[in-house]
Image (cartoon, rainbow, N blue to C red):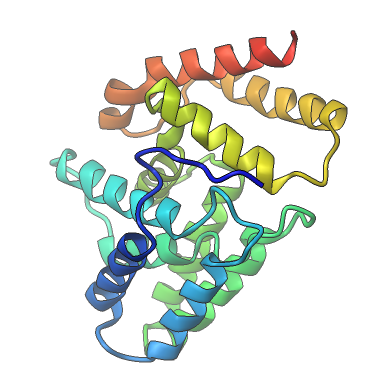
Length: 220
């Protein structure tokens, strides 16, 4: 499988350093084995896009959204914790990745001594990345950060598509094109791709252009 090269692909150490820093911000130095497990998951050889690099960018987009949204009131630590775990289980052959990731995230938060309501919030946040239809402001922050790649520059969007296609290498071209086209149409037909004002302003138009271009390429 080919290696994806883009601003979403950095040297081996950089993304993991970012994840370690984020972990220290939300968990301190407690339970380092949980962090080691998280990082090991994101090194799995079948991952090409859903790696530590993706998580690093999600964390950066979260910070950007919150910084640009003056009236927002959210539990930023819980959102960042959910971001760290939102793809901890990623197996393209199964359909319960988000649910499995949510359970691990909630269990990890509980081990850190977080309250049960806060643990439940972490699980809820991770689950919001399944359908990408946020029902609360904190979910909107995480979902928009997760989908930020849709509004990236065309070359970076193409690298993302290449990475995801590599992760689904077990699917033949015909079935991939059919399934991917359905996903793209679902995004395109949505009244809005992004749910925070800053992301709509900065990425909505470009995202729609990227999605339309990819859909057109699948029809060729």
